[in-house]
Image (tube, rainbow, N blue to C red; front, side):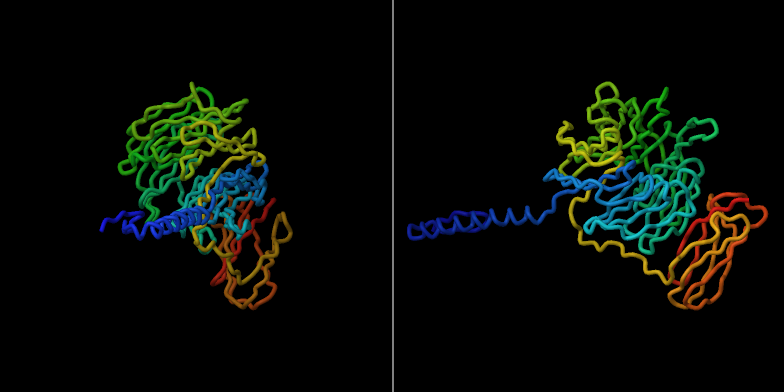
Length: 452
């Protein structure tokens, strides 16, 4: 008996079975269409989330329907960077000096991780699901965060002005823009390597001027975007071997590129500002290093191209700071669509689909903090807090550079309102100080202003 095969199913080709074959084929075709349709419906549309630096909000863009929910979530003061893991976003708020943790599905803030050992946080990178690293511009260090406990647990003292962060294998790479705040000028940039296992220093290499971001490229190399000094020194990308920290190639682009992302075919796209009517996007081959678009023939988008990101279908998203748009380039690099998203879009992340990963839960605190008074103070201040259960409590006070100035065991205290008194030593200078109250299961932090 002869048979034909449809989608792997053998169907006999006898005269008596002609009608049954036709019915079966019709049923199979309808079933296949419904299966494909249900699969398509089961795949959530990719969502772009945009950090509005000036508006201090997060906007939501459905890239399939084009629907925009402007100012969907309120952020802290001067939000600068964001990373998305599953359905959770981690937003760095530079002036608020904390990392805001957001459940994107519920569109609500779960909590914040306060930074007291670093100041003016800039960029963030995740290490798996349990740690994050945040570069601190003003204090020359990188904060180490425990995401489960929602707290800062350590710092890496890099010196200089750390900015870009990248993790490859068991190494953390940090770029130092080496900016001199006395002369208002840039020195040679540095790339530093640290071990993720024990945070030990592994080495460094001198690179181009003002290294903003670091990304691991499809060529197995680090691509470090060096923006230049916005005047006589223009932009370039240093290609660095992550194993021996050698500079293997320099991609000269000109202008002032400050972000980078890669498509699946190995094309690098860079946001390169452009502060007049048009914004500029550059591109090059991240394997052969052939330049496609540079300062002489940029891809034009609305004004001031900042952060870039790539979707699973190789569309490139560009934050356009001056025009308040998110621009979308298609897979060929042509402008496909623009979305009005809010005031000063600076960073963009993509939520491809719901992962089923349970978002970080809000930290269960055994006590709550009220305030310290007086504030500011010039001799003594009292920190008032409420213990929900009896517990041991300790107090630590740090200066603005993260140096410990006082550590005190407050003993085992009963539940209820408690007070801790802080009197600064005579050698302490005026300024902001951070305090940390710790029990066996919780930590609460706050700030206080001392004026002599």
